[in-house]
Image 1: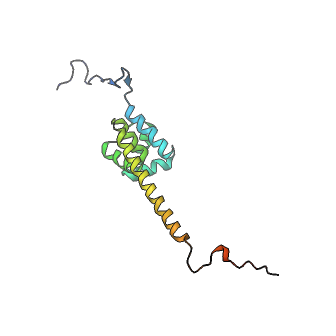
Image 2 (image 1 turned 45 degrees about the vertical axis):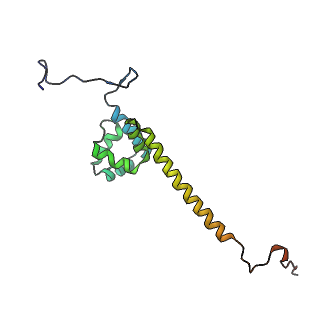
Image 3 (image 1 turned 30 degrees about the vertical axis):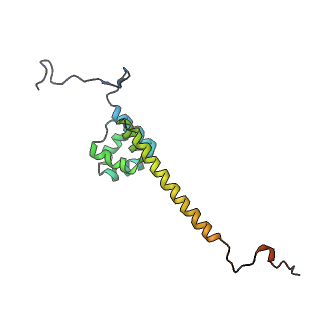
Length: 144
């Protein structure tokens, strides 16, 4: 492919959302920025956390938070691994929201199983021993 006769840059292609509207050129970076801010807050600590997850330079991560640039695929995997919000945003951008529902359903099932196990342990510990008398047979003498 060769360059056009005038200038040395290819014209920008406009992205369509499917409903007749154009998406902004930096929609990916804007989505990443808003999700990172929602998930980790818009602070230096959030940028440091993401930098430690990805191995990217802190200045690069600050650009992600500012919406100037978005992470590459390799750098997007680490925040998605650590943050359910980033994973959900990625799946929504890919049009696969149903997968996020499956993840949430699996987490809910796990929480219910843990709760049931805790309730079962409590009921086993609360069962009365046969050696104890019933409350009807208790000695209710008054001390003076």
